[in-house]
Amino acid sequence: DRSDEDSDLPMEAELQRAEFMIPLHRDPEISDGAEHDPTAWDWLQSELFEHFHRFWTQPGTGETVWKSEKTGRMIRDQTKHYVVVVPTRRLDELRSVLRNAASSFKVRRIYFSSGGQVEYVQSDQAGDR
Image (tube, rainbow, N blue to C red):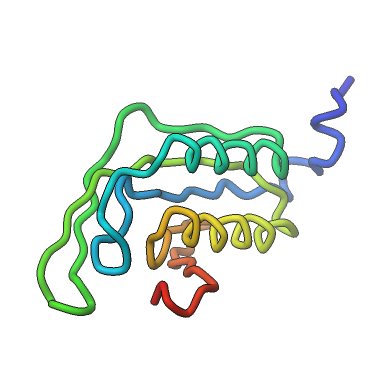
């Protein structure tokens, strides 16, 4: 017998494991480079729970390194890694949450992987690019 929270999940064949990473600091080139406020993390986790009823985080953090689009220099940050299992038909809904997260966390883009495909989800705000 399935609980109410599982009632919107179809059979396993229709599910996708989606992963994404959020840097621990705001982008220093479009913001102040400061650590995110705890309220931002609370907002993200509330959104994930509200939309998808479950999510996982990897313990600890990982390091992310990327080349600055403005200066060409190397930028480093620590990241939190999230995993969400979603119905394939709702991947765009997760992308929408991540576009909002990119704006809220003041980062240009968020690394997103699902079904072996990798992409960067960007904020909808033009000033964040």
